[in-house]
Image (cartoon, rainbow, N blue to C red; front, top):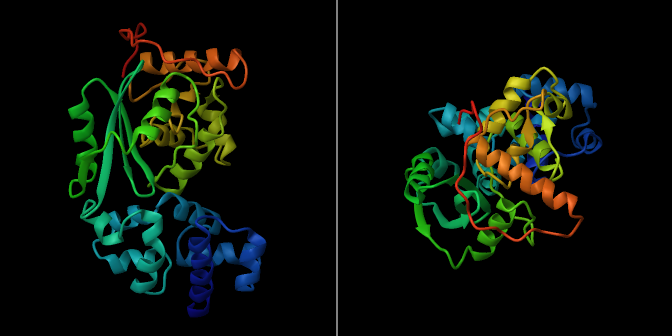
Length: 298
């Protein structure tokens, strides 16, 4: 078992250094084990597959481990690392803060935030050094900021409209159905499954939609339709991860955390842009009162 653990740790470190999944052929070379054998080793030591672990590295899965285990050392071994030191050295960049900071609710972490007026309402965004950590849509700036603060109660939230001006412009364009001038960096934390769903959502072209069933099939989990819907609901960065592009199989809107009227308007604007041709981004319009569709629930 000791040799098995050493092989798994070697593979884990390779994926951490790469910032995500590593090709199976490379893992076979590093460990001297076939893909099938290494999958069995990972199941025994980490409780997941090599691919899932790589996605966990990309998405900050260590955050969930820290919250599930009282002791940091428990999380270290649950994540497949051989020592506390190795864990701190390798997972810090993935988390965007030190593991103890995150377990303590973001102690010492500074998140800059800004509020953007869009035709969908007010958008509040918070970003750390690695990118966007939260994007919320609503009417009350204070309420949206408070929601982010509750998730990371020990972090410091500082308003920085000037420093986040480019980010704000990108969000305003997304809310208008367009595209940001440059890709908006994100610093996401979630489970390996959520990361797979969020990756799939980002591959849905603007102006198009997919059903929850289609997304489940896309990520290789065709029976996990409810779990896909849950991952969409837990999307931490609205607009940037386009969970609004997922609808029910019968073509109805399904749910949306920020209200079905917002979802319908956003999809309509994206379709409008897509129909007008590539490279054309409609200018933002003056915000109009949102009217919920009949029978809709938020």
